Length: 337
Image (tube, rainbow, N blue to C red; front, side, top):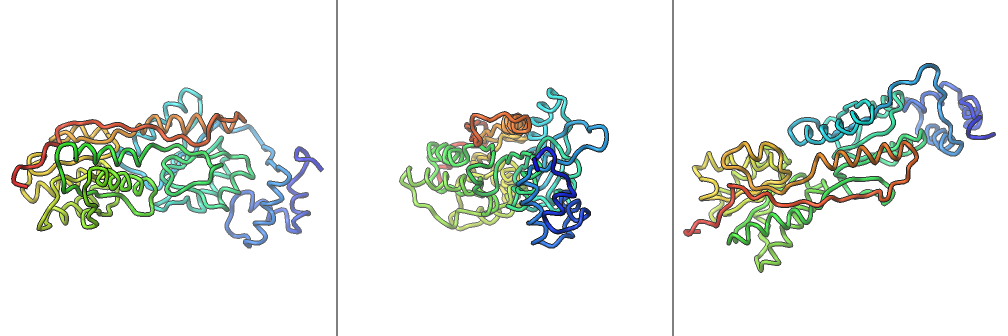
């Protein structure tokens, strides 16, 4: 029996199950006992079973999966993927995890039915079971900005988050700030932890004490930035500068400062992260860490297409460089502080 000749009936016979059961497993259906599904998955992978097309092939497509869709951050990434897809004649399908870090089972069922060229997962990841299902069908995937540490053999595109956090904080210490706060993202998100770690390293390098009271957990959104900034700016010894782990979080800082009658940058310096278009629209324009989101998305798309075509990439993991974009939201601290 060869991989080219194995049939669904033969897979069913080897697994000791019915053909409809194998079909359910192939389609990612959840209504199969875990032990049975695992046995069938092993046989599918072992024998390299590939479903034969029953009709005309569909247009080639890529699945782009977000943890949560919305905002300029997502739009920048979509733009990068779209540009490559258009040039390559590939269709794009957008999916959302509903705020979770992993796609739901409904997505697995859908993607196994569509059989795209590959999948790009943004700010999300696959568990071992989901990964095995895609690998058994030879559907490659690439992770953009991984939520957590990924295995060495998982293709991933990210950026130098630790260096970005350090760079933002060094900019503020260079201006003379000593009470510098940080508002990160969720603690279970890798890029957030890396940016905060870069912040603490920069403080120590400048001979400053790391004050736990000035390290706050946000959500990378306006609401989280506003909530944490409001608390920080009402401390008896408030910070003279805040590094927000995202531009949207920085907008929340702007709102909190405005409500408390503080002027940026006279009373408070603010640094964001991402360099979204909105950073140049707000007043004062936002000093921020430029993260090459579109380039990250373009590279992820080319990587997944190479994998789909059987091309071995030079590297499975790429972390792109970041740099500071100094604008009008930062200045030396007030003389009275």
